[in-house]
Image (tube, rainbow, N blue to C red; front, top):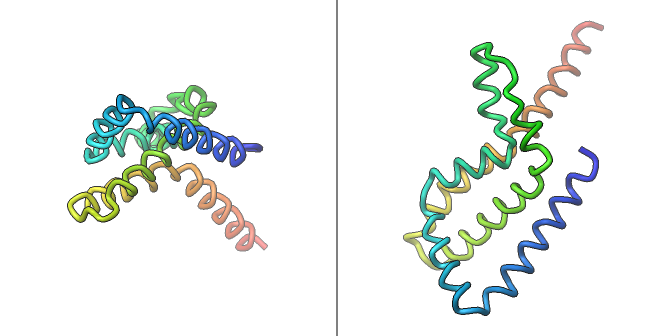
Length: 141
């Protein structure tokens, strides 16, 4: 979409500034430590990946069973830059926390492996469909 990259960058910047400014507070620091505990749960990364992709994987599953369109993109599409920014910021926070802590690095890898393919699924499908169209066009000529 036009302006998507700009919206994503702005939202990541805003989240970074808010967390940086708020992290000087003891209350916020305690809350962030509690939030980092959630980063170790794979289900959190699965949910964030699905939301960041506007539930693209769920829609593909519904289409595979000929159940039609559920309208996830209509509802979640406008929020996708914000959800992606939040997910990217959470991933960055997890990796910063895992830096130097070998016990957390495994969880960081698992979280990244779960999140990024789900989050970028719409882009992968777009590229796949474009490559498929160009190869079909070449074969027809």
